[in-house]
Amino acid sequence: MVHIDEEALRSSLQRLRQAAFDADVVAVLKRTVNAVDEVFDYSGAGIMFVTESGHLAYVAASDEGGRQLEEAQAAAGQGPCYDSYVYAREIVSSDLRTDDRWPDLRLPAQVRAVAGIPLLLAGSPVGTLNVYRDQPTEWDDSDVQALRGYSGLITEILAAALAAADRGTVAEQLQYALDYRVVIERAVGYLMGAHGLTATTAFNVLRKQARDSRRRVADVAAEVLGGSTGPDADQIRDRRSPGRALTEAT
Image (cartoon, rainbow, N blue to C red; front, top):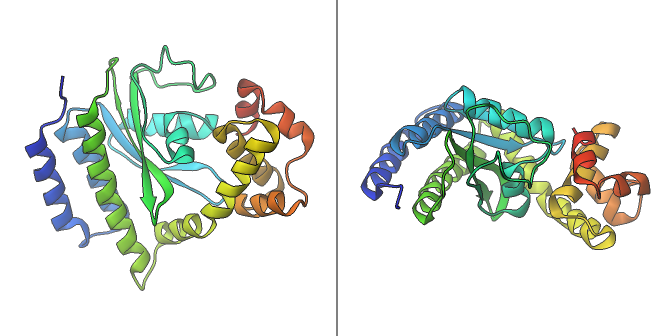
């Protein structure tokens, strides 16, 4: 079954592009998630951006369920949207109630199926676009392609915000993500190879150390790569158990 009407997708993206650069960035992002939700009959949609501490923070959501889903993932430090950001690729779940990949994720009652799409600037992930349905759903290629279309539009808007002379908070946050993504990726790779961690668990090791020391996650990553005072052995060992690791990391 194909879920997406291609003509509706083209029309929606065209309307949003026509209005995109005449309004406040956050307002346009909210309008975009509303369009994703309404045009394709998803139950809700949202956008998250990475912060200096390594959290994915709620930016915009089409409804209360979408906002709660984003906040639940931010609180747990895990979920399809976290994996979409860390691995820089689409992550889908047909039913989170029976999906054992994120054991510590506490879901809103109305959320069942979720798809996460990375938002890429200059080839680096800076956040995610997320949609959900309130019933189990087998996501197909038309869903993924439609969401890629919206993620492309969002990154066009973000690139324009970065280029603007008068930058707002969103632009400054995005610039940080771009400036330091490479060192974070290298540190994640080092921890994966040295300690047998998954990418998401390695990222959460850095994130917890940043939170505990009240520093930026990029600074902790640089210490790991430089052989300085990065995460200690106890922190690494604890994070081999996903449930304990990701609960402590928030």
